[in-house]
Structures are given as structure tokens and as C-alpha cells.
Length: 625
Image: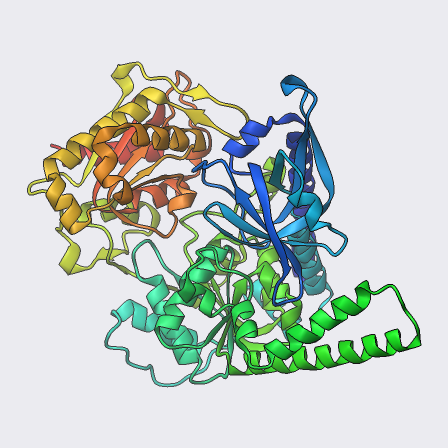
């Protein structure tokens, strides 16, 4: 039935609408009900802050610096492109303090540590912020991303007799994707499955999926594929769901000597990353000083009271000169770049208006909502998806939308409809054999193998690579802390740190520092993560190793690896309730972060009622026999 893609896309739009309404409603309720302290703890607000200097940035936007004055080391959720609102506490006695919001919203331009730069709308008064005491900043509801996703779905549904319509009908059917035929190319520095993946990318005319399980060198393969594609095309578009993923792939491409133009600001603000952002390149252009002085003249002219005939003529002349310079600088920046890199929503940036690309690469595609992918796809003739649908899924907050299938990604849809365009990377270079084997058997039909050189590596001689410390007989109990902040199990947290202390003592301080043996502590619950961080700070033993220990949620460890990983599962109750730990893809991420040692702490009676955890528990127990 030819209209089925349209029906499916209508369903997507309906589910996205559910998600939008549910998130907006939750946001508004939280804003009213949730205490400021909790918002700060969850990383959705900074309070108190100080407003620093304000200035016009290279894109002629009014910006202001915001400094967090409480040295809270709480991981926050502010990042480039997210909308924010300012507030201040009115002084009506400590108990009756009310939050008063400023009338406008700003946009995060970039964040680094305790400093943030926010772009303001033209009607904002920076002095008002600079002179306000008890000032705070919080994330606003992100209308823009939803608007862009709705527009993208509408555009795809309306497409007729063009490339977008062709790709839509192809992705939603079992029709075979078109291919080129030529002799395979040789890449002796890649393993055979990576080499095959690069060739599959080059052969595909329409679509291709690089399925990269943990540690299989997906980024290496993708960089090679992009490099080879650039021998055939003058420019490609590279996107990912998150700023962090875009940064990572961009950095690898820059290391290969490829000229990358990064639209939007990087998450990690270092000189190397900033060097290839659009803003920095724009400022570094020889014509920029001239443009800057014209813009300054325009602002000065506008602030003058006298507005006669000559005022408008001068203003028009200056504005057309500024526009001419801006167009010239942009054309030169875009013409010289080989890779344009942005987030999926960033691909809607007006800077890309009218731009078309032969190939779009979407990295971490299994974490992106389908609607977000279509934002970028409209700019391309063919699409290469890279990711792993057996790892973290996209975040969907509405249970109804999730049940309806909003969490099913475009990459998954193609994997189901077109198994012939999927190529699996089968050799992993991260984990020793025993840690990898469980994940390979459970999630990848046993097809992922360990590279011979790391198969038997371990930190200590005769060490068991995986252990499960069972807390079932220890009478530990989980506690519930506030909505969406999750659960905590303080006794298990203490035991996690005691276990780590013992293991590090066995290795020895000197060796840990000399060899930089690093540790990750993972817990699915944010409250447990923050509790663990506080405890580590208090304990004298961990002082020399703090730079080698990181504690985070599963999502926070996506794409990372450590020599030693401890997982605190938290759940311990009489009903065998394990909440969102039932999403096994999260657990796949957690257990595949460790290179040489994985320690799981959890209540076996609660966890093993679920068949996956029963299997995992038995697998780990079997090692110790």
C-alpha cells in the first residue's frame, strides 16, 4: 500500500506530540512545585550566579557571561543551544522567598566549568542582570527542538517526486537499496570487518548501516569511510544526536588532517575544539575587523536620537555593506571546509540554507529520535547510519509515546526492513575475553570476537575478571528520593567504596599512579551517583587517585571505557521491582565499559527474578568455580 510510509509518519508525529505535551506539562509542574535546591541538585539550575560582562559576539548577538558562585561540583545539564531563563529570589524573609522570572529566555552559547555564556534577545537589558542580587539561571523548556522535528516530519510527509520522497519510501519498505559495483578497496590497517564496512559505505547509493558493538572501533571505521568518501565528493555532512558525539568524531577527523567546520559550539571547550568552530573561523577571517567596525557603526547610529533623512540612507548603506561582507566570509568558510559537522537539530541552522550534500553520516544514530534524523536527511542524497541499537536508546519521557513506538529509531527500522544494508563490526579491542563474552552471546548472537592481543589481559595475576558481590544477605534497602531523582542505597554505596579500596590496595599505589590505572563507578540512579561522589571526596584513601576515578550514570559513561568498573545496581526490595533496569540496553552499556576488571554489586534475590540478570549472575558465578 503506497500510503503506508505517510501513515507511519503520521503516527510518529502523533507520538512526538504526546512526548512534547508530556514533557512540557512535566516541566511546567516541576517549575512550580519543585524546590530550587532540588533543581540545583539535578543540574537543571545554577543558584546563586553573578552576571559578568556583556558584549556582542562575532555573530552580532548580544551575549552575557554567567558565573556560578557556589563551587557546586554537581554535573549540570546546560549545554550549547539549550534555552534558559533567568530568575531572582525576592526578599520576603527566608521562608517566604519567591522566585520571580525575567520576561525573556536566552540561549546557552557555551559552558565551561562554572562559567557560561548566554546569548540574549535584543530586548534584554544586561545591566538589569548585572545589578540583580540573588540571581539564578535555569533550563527552559526546549520548544525549538520540537518545532524543528515537527517541521521535518511535515516536510517528509509532503515530499513528492524528489530525493526526500524516494528515501522516505525506501526506508519504510522492503524495496532493495541501490548499490554501485566496483572492486573492493584494501585498507590493510583495518581489520577485515572494518574494511568490509568501509567498502559497503562506498558501494551504497542510498543507505547503509555500520553496526558497531562496544569496543569494535566504530569511530575509526567511520573516519576512514568519511575520508574515502571525500575522495569522491567535495564535501559531506556529519551529524550526531549530542554535541559530545559531534565533538568526538570532529576531533578524530581533524587529527586525520581533514578541514572540519563545526556549526554550533563544542561541549569540551579546549583550543583544539574551538579552532574548527564556525565562530572562531569567522572571527579569524581577514575581513572580520572591517565587518565588526561596520556593525559597531550601525549600533551607534541606532542609539542616536536624531533620525532625519540621511539617517535611513546611512543605515541602509551600512547594512548592505555588512550583509555583503558576511556573505563573502561565509562563502569562503563553507567552500574551504570538507566536512560540515553539527548536531541533528543544528543541521537546521540558517547557515546551511540552500546547502545540499551527497552524503550524510549520522553517528550514534541509535540514540536519535527518527524525527531528528529527518532534519538532516533533507539536505542529503544518501545516508550512512552508524551506531548500536543494542546500547542506549533515545530518551523518551512519555510512557504512552514509548509504548506507541516513539523510541524506535530510524536506524532500527532500516535494520529490520533491510538487513542487507547492515554490516556488523565483529572484532573488539576493549575488554578481555570473559567480560566481552556475555555481551556478545546475549546481544550479538555470539558474533563479536576479542582481538587476540587483549584476550587474556588483566591487572592482577590469576584475577577473576568479573565478580558479583551479592548483598542479598546483608539487609541493604533501597530508598526513594524524590520524583525522577530516583533511588539510593547508601549501604551498597559504602560497600562499593570499601570494595574499590581493597582492590586498589591489592594493586598498590605506585603502580596505579605510574600506569594511570583508571576506575569508573557506574550507577543507573542519579541520587546514588551524587552520594558516591560525596563519599569519595570525604575518604582520605581516595585522595591520590581522585583524578583517576569517575562516578557517573550509565548515560554519562556512553562511549567511554576504564580499566576497572564497579556497578552499583541499587535495587533491593521484596517485590523484585527493578524499574528501568529492565531496559537491558542500558545494562549492556554498563557491563561493556571495563577493560580488565568488572565488579557488580547488587541484591541477587531482587535482580535475578528477571531472566537477563539471572543469566548474568549465573555467568559471573560460573567464573569463580
